[in-house]
Length: 498
Image (cartoon, rainbow, N blue to C red; front, side):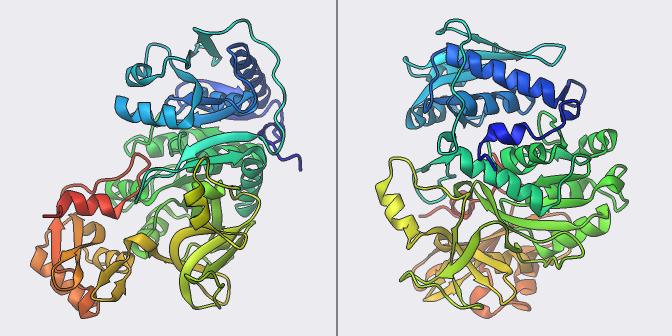
């Protein structure tokens, strides 16, 4: 294949619907290609050249998809979370070395204030006919841009920074094109499939799984402005969505609003996909029993252009607690010395393949730590079984070390979630004068239970050293804007260091 996003976009039938905005525009592949080309030419007219990075601060919708593709065609796209504060925008704009900033017309005030002086401001708007228009304060007439090649930078994102300063991840055209094909083939996506995109489009999950994989298949992407558990099923029903991909938080919100009956619209779902955070076996069971579609947990990360492994479609064996088998790339488990381990041994998950980055940008220290013998070290602890199914134990830096005993927090999460009154559970380590660390947890309840009852429940199911000594009953678990849980943040919120 010609490994660029332009190639991916050219695969759909020109007359087929590529994008649907609920209550708004329906855009065919032909119109989408025209708009991407026009916006890429407009960016070129504003001074964007190959290698220049274009920061995008846009809500989910037609404009965010068109501008992502246009920026990746003229230069490189650098989408940012629209809810960042001014100081956060200042850091990301400077660290990305953005040449231009695209914002909604009259919006994104914090990003505008944070914009460095040399950056070109470009405003985007969508008219009633579903046409994206750009207005620049620093450019001339649109000009033809050079078509990107496979090795050109297409997308720049930051890691979530769970343990340190966020790292800059440059993804090339070939990385993203392979990822789109890989995901489409994993789920046998077809032109008749309709994807419900509820993940934010400043995140690799939404860009690749929901959007670009769908374009590779020639299917349709339905893009509401944001995830809303109240309107989710009416939109699914109205547009006859055949699948959706989300983080466990979103799945849990849908379950909390469900009274046990199968929602109208769920009958059209071929499958439900879960990725970007661990899905408990109990949540998987509830999703399948209430919504009547197979749940496929997948494993992805920014540095691999999203998907690395997935449970298969039926009649394949999908296993609760496993993220499935490698898809399109190689997965291994490695010890600290850099030796690959046999099946059944626990170690660090390592990957190699066409979707994996060549290196972090401007970070030789991170590159030295992250690459060993041609393998990329993910920082995740896991086990590969003899059938190639991968079980994740947790992040290496999130493991709880209680007097030398290494404890995987997820194991404790899963036990607490078995309690009928527990809706969410997050275990973490807290400082202890004798053991170094002790086990604690935060839970959100959907029924009545006391801390004492929950600890007793855990004690019946866990070895003594794994039982939480303190359980915080809270109204809400803090999350990143993409719905991820960072255990360090939870610990700092509910059990701050003295």
